[in-house]
Image (spheres, rainbow, N blue to C red):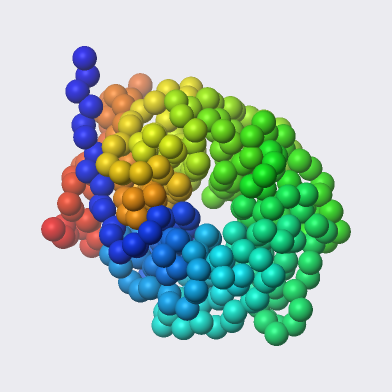
Length: 340
């Protein structure tokens, strides 16, 4: 029997209630960042690579269900049970704008060009706020058929994706017309939806199923049944060959995208896993749980093929630098000197 290496994650404490949403920024000149939403009402910003705490955004008076960063990681946004969505200065932690709603805000997302904020929640209305004119009334998209759980942008901000807490399916809206142009059918309500970094796939979870959809033609590409009810899944951004899932059984699993084979099963959380996300460089992934912790796991070689040194033409696949980078506890900066 193969002895599987036990993964030792970076454990990020700080939240006093369940962690319900995670979001990685793209890579910026200052590195990449991770923001977390929690029922404790205070989103937290961390260094995405090390998990080190940078700051806490204080101002909400209810559970925060959603948190995200803009493309440059200069502003954060959050959606809360206090009936508001807030925009924050990610450098100072100050509130820049507070957008009042008439019910719980479950989801928020910056547009790719960073000029707009999309919100959705229990009101069943998708709203687009113009961040260049924050005092102007938002544009309201045609009423959602159900209470909104997730929102995101795709197709260079020409399309909006939404899913509902109380019904199955993923709805795709044309921003210009404000109409639903496509519904991706699922049996159960969709608990998470992610657009891949290259814009090719939409990754969704519903019930105990993880599905991958063509983000341009909307066909179902892959569907895998999981060992338990899953709340979240994320596709590896660099090669698209693996995906990670989290759910009710408290374990964080890694699977092969092409075959559905389980490559790793990480144990450590003490409550259901509500959210999982790959970092933008694909070397690690984060999980957030009912237990109030965030865990950052290194991907590492998960099977023998990844560790194969010789290729058909006799050249080596794995360089010394690649091996050094995978040595636990070391970070190799650009100048090549190891830091402990």
